[in-house]
Image (tube, rainbow, N blue to C red; front, side, top):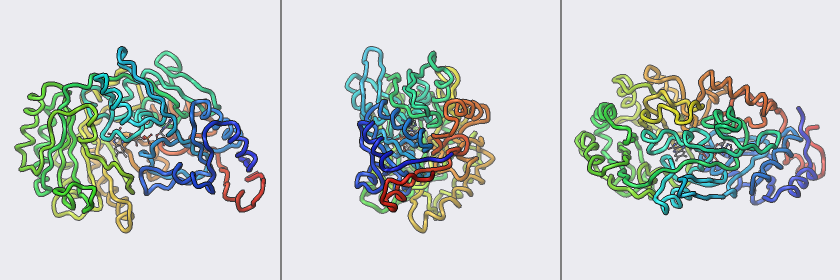
Length: 482
Ligand SMILES: Cc1cc2nc3c(=O)[nH]c(=O)nc-3n(C[C@H](O)[C@H](O)[C@H](O)COP(=O)(O)OP(=O)(O)OC[C@H]3O[C@@H](n4cnc5c(N)ncnc54)[C@H](O)[C@@H]3O)c2cc1C
């Protein structure tokens, strides 16, 4: 397959869409392709800021005619492996947002972040199923399943999708619900960006009242005692409660609050919906597990989800790796302490155990492609991707994974998979059956694997990308790669 593009081709795109088109020579190109993860430098040949579904459809048709691969980005929170070549469609301007307070539903455009949804929903006493930070895009998060703060009570965010509006590789706009395009409905709920670009999504909201949440910080010297208690405590937690435990080596930087700056701490994150006294009482065993430095738990407003995990709110250069665990037995605990316990010099800034189970273990709308249903915990690591740590991180990640092999279920949760290391790893979030269904759908809807970036099945078929730099160098209207 060969691709052809020229300045006049780019002009043709510019004239047929409403949003801006950027070549690498344009000043607007760098901010348009920038990711939240500063270590990921996307290098598409062309970037396009779509304004609506029609724009997305036109751009996809334009790319298809030229054999260009297409990537999509909204916030860049999921940017792990960099995009090289092709057309990057940015959805950040697609900010449609409406809420039906009677039906308790929301409709979002592809560029909407959770922050906008939780703020508007709260005015109606409602909430959406956001994850640890409201800065991520609602659509990208939900296409990956979407593991919410209150996931054990409500399940994955993708369990509560009513409809997707999808543009496939031929530029066709399709509505996808459990009754319309039902196979696509199955595959989009957890299947990530394999099958097209979602331009809008409708989903259920939930009552946003009676939240009790926050975190307990312990000095890292108590890591063993806290982990021991955590592994016991989670076995009897009701579904209304969600919890995670993070081993944090916090940098000595202004963005970290003074008492925690430059420290090694263990952070218990907790959220409960229901009676506040019960919520607080449930935490008692963890409060007794070791002396804590700070107790930030209490009643929580539905606009304050970011207070629970306290994820970074500014772009940072990180390398990430995650996988799923079946159990937290003594071998797993020993391995975790060996790598992240007191006295260990580790380049890993955060290692997090997130409790799964409860409503996460079953799908509300029948089958879907979420790969984390059977697991007991999500395990996720992130480290600063700056020299010399950047080179150490993959080695440490491999070693941790090896040491946790016995407790691991062999799979990953696509949203928390992190960087993939090879072709097999990039599709490891899905088991063989789902992978096969994704492949089949791709063979029919995207036979040339136009959507071949990120966590997708199959290798790229489109083998040529348009190098606008060459056009610039040639300084003319030359047809490239012909
Ligand atoms: C600090 C932090 C905390 C996080 N916490 C959680 C959490 O608690 N739970 C959880 O489940 N995940 C969590 N994530 C992971 C996050 O949900 C994923 O990275 C998700 O992909 C982010 O989506 P985005 O659109 O914001 O990112 P982007 O980088 O813009 O997109 C990531 C990918 O999503 C797909 N995608 C995005 N938009 C579209 C679209 N319109 N159509 C088709 N495909 C699309 C594409 O494959 C794209 O490459 C977290 C990430 C970060 C950085």
